[in-house]
Image: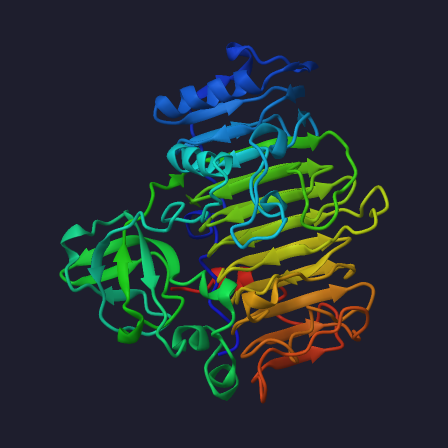
Length: 503
């Protein structure tokens, strides 16, 4: 019970072959020049927009270096930006998001820059959603960033649902008339005054029941929990989902399927390096937005064979679900968040990833995290990683049922998270076959921290530097198995093993 089912994480429920769009366009036909000096951002964006208007296609970048003085946007579904390979095609970004869009403050107040955890110089998001976000930023009305708009009010009920158990593939709709196979819907769960939904995310029991939730205002701002999922089949009132339920459906949480802003789907970025102009890393939470690739309000999208260099923040999943990041790499002068996963991002797969050691010393006052997850995000997988710096970061916000498997890590980062964002971990976090090269336990050995969770196959580690105490009192019901081993656990990779299981 401490291990979640994550065997269908990733684009197209974990498909090994990513979609292929046969219609192709060369960016040079729109005026892009791979000479390293001509601003090619307008031409690349024109090519991407034209592919979108045509119903989809692949926009190709030949070998060479393309200077970009603006961010690159993919706003239409079924559009792919494809370079000749991460060692052959480079986009050299000369500006940051503060210069291009403006100062982005935090909706929670203070002088923090939201470019520390949002936005990318390659930004995949539906055009209408991206336009509304940018308008709100420029108007200094700091927005919510998820599936239901800047004020979280752009949704309508499709149907209410009968009770069901976590892990069920089928739900019973009170009125299925608005539901169609293939349609993406949001499962919406509200909390009740006793916060039993949040307790359920933590596995229930005396510890979560005794926890003080009322003052965790940042955490409670993330609720309702919203989980995007495609409908696979409708038969009478029985609705089969593409993935099993992440949580119970109980009447006190008012379970329902709702609409959402139009999603971006079937789009990707492949075969290139995005290199920002090298500038010193900014003090913690004051990033200017030299950011890499971000997927926002996306479903069944992907990034493959992409390197980002000299960035503040590398690869981001923001209200993104069912996406795959494969063969990605963060390199250069050092990053605040090499990978961040937040704002209710679910069922994503990050595999065969690398965080290189930084090439310049960290300036005073900066921060390094690693592979981040927060904001009620669930059922995400980090698989086959080489982390030469960083840590397994939770920024509080009660992420649950996430898996890190078959990873080597030099554990020298620190976790973040405001105290008002609540617990570091919910239930069913799993660290499976992890090799720590410097013997530091923090955020990786979970048996003293995460409720109803599991650490399986970990070499001997000890607490030093950042030492955390559990959020919940009493028995955490957390497992520690095959401790003191290296690569002894079978199967070696939990995701690969679950993916191979019959449904």
